[in-house]
Figure 1 (cartoon, rainbow over the protein chains, first blue to last red):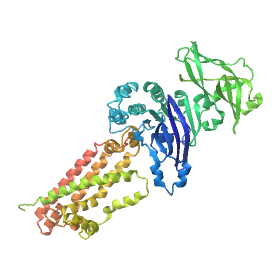
Figure 2: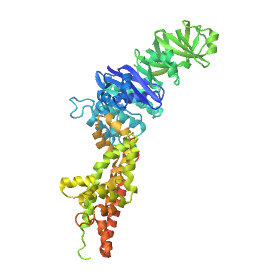
Figure 3: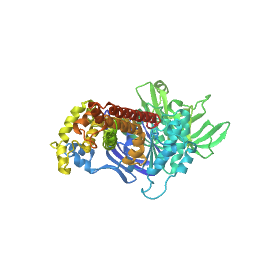
Figure 4: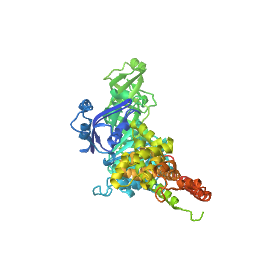
Length: 384
Length: 227
């Protein structure tokens, strides 16, 4: 577990970002938000690629940047009189002195080098390069094996497919032996099939290379698949930080999640398999989903779209829906549209349901009421 | 045409070689700065760099003569320092040539660095490469075409200069009498045969160099600096 403290601010034309958070980095932490919310900027600030960012970045007690003894407000008031003094007070480690690995959205492989040349570049300049302390970290053969790069080594980056490029870029970032891997929407330029392929590589990184990952994405499916914890960024501010299931269940955050497919993430344990279905034990009942390859006892992460959850005040009969769980209405949120969003307590977990306002009124639903949640479909996201 | 003096030819080649070396040292950092700076002063500097492109060589030569002359700021200092004059000397010619050919080195380099862009440089930095390492191992190889253009154009332009040399260097055998001046002199003294040989030699040489460069440039990959 690593700790990243960011207390930073940056101004750009038409955009400002202000973040003051302590981020516990364990396995894969998602940095999630709509495009334009400042995700990439925040990642670049952490990496030292935004020299105009004010404030503090501390990784595991190591100060990467700091404006000593000055609050940003104080700094502003003295900027005209003593910009030189302010500059001297400032501590800023440039990107090449920060132990970060950065996987860019556009991969940025060096075209004048072969794939192997790109990888060796990282080894040569990275944290375990000659004269950079002792120790041997992540090695070439390890990375080549993990990302299956053997057959690509002699190729030129320009001749690789998008998915291959991204694998090389991930391998290159790892070979610099960073202490944290920053990934900026590494899947956004890939088609669905490629995405699925790369996701499985990314998923295995934290354990295989003992490195935490901060993963930027605007795709909630990637969040659910890859991360346990997430930060929600909205218009340059952190709107929330916490467990993925918890944040997606918080009704007050729904405006920030608006553009996305509203839904929830739940966890359930594999009970048994039969008739091509997998039965999952849930705190307050059981769920059936199309067979998943997981041994009984394994905990699975599942995603349920809010529009796939209906609500009944009595246990329904003669219904094709198999997944019915007793639930409590914890919160009702009426937005400006014809919909009502319900937050349902199901044991200790929460489900979101989107129904029409008419249905809400006809059924006379109120907060605190006991109901049955009808789940039309469940998406399998990953094993825990 | 017995005993044609080839001294001017070697002098021209020496002058062009030294000029190109000096140009690379000065033009590279300036081109880098122009490519990546965000200050507004950039336009002013670019305009100054481009001046030799539009000024008549005689105008440039005239000002250089003033500045480099024994009474000028730089020339006077030089006299104090070395007891020799800058004007009508090889060193003076190098200074004049560097200024005259400056845009021909700066502009291709700046264009090449701009084509490389920040993206691969940032990638190199996150991999732990210092700015100098990034410059040497990422930016320069990616900007190779810019270097080739700068060297060739700087060299060829120096070989071909006449007006500035005449103003600043004069016509001193072994010191400032370069091939273009020699051709001029041969023509003035109606030694057309000698003028022919020097001119044809220069023409052939220039063509061969340019041909080699264009052939070579086709083999240097261009396009995106990264994928």
